[in-house]
Image 1 (spheres, rainbow, N blue to C red):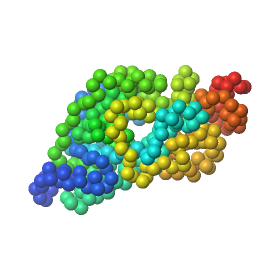
Image 2 (cartoon, rainbow, N blue to C red; image 1 turned 60 degrees about the vertical axis):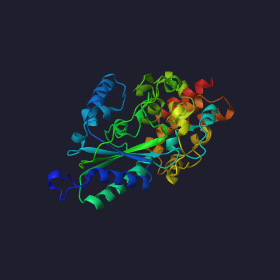
Image 3 (tube, rainbow, N blue to C red; image 1 turned 120 degrees about the vertical axis):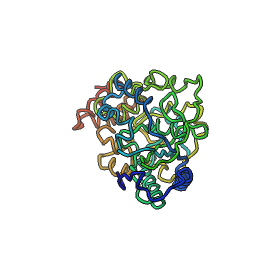
Length: 362
């Protein structure tokens, strides 16, 4: 834990913690966060839901979720000495993002809009570290640890408890004035800041996110079976995409935004002012054939600094092969697939063979 844990008894001066919390929120906005809140660390109710979710096997091959067990819901066990969590959100919607038109164009490759720019892990972590640095300059040495989707942290629940929004039926955080196109990050800390109050939910009877899911991964309001989620299938899953789900993946080659795109609250989503989240390499309107033609060195070079690079070239080709299998049949599509038919990777070869079979080609 950066800075080490400092016991409350050892703090040299009495402090107005409410005033400090207000200043921290202002600093956060200066650093590019759209909102900052403070959560307490009592996640007992969420822990029960986590246990049920894991018991149902909805985490799929994400063994790390089960491996960390209850530590996800117990911040003070994950980082000893933690009494509060500073939660922050940062908008990521890129300018002129055309999503539905790309999804409708079966020759295009749809990349989840959060991944068309720079890797958010790097952006948020750097800003949170700078925020922690400002706090240290104000209060002296204090205990903290920064997280950005990088450890067993229940970030949506913590953000909800920090008053940054409510959990939507698709399980993502929603905010009335911002929708859901934003990232979350946390600072676990031993500072006894006053916790913010959660806000009311505003999903009502709406079920658009549930109804639109191509693979019916949202099995009930607030319950996601990751094993059927296209984001899981194209990003987290290391092996073969289940054959029965491949036609439903469509042209989504990295992630899926459908449940967000239909959400009425996202009519309020704002374009991110953050330059790092601007689209790179034309990933908002690239073609399946064009991306499938990239060599491994092109993949590494063009996606340097991108979250996509984390899945590796093999899974990238796997995903694109599925997209090409779902694309309209053409000589160009078949030629692209045949060029990879003898790829060294058995995973790629399997998906290419499936795709060729969709076009009735051996």
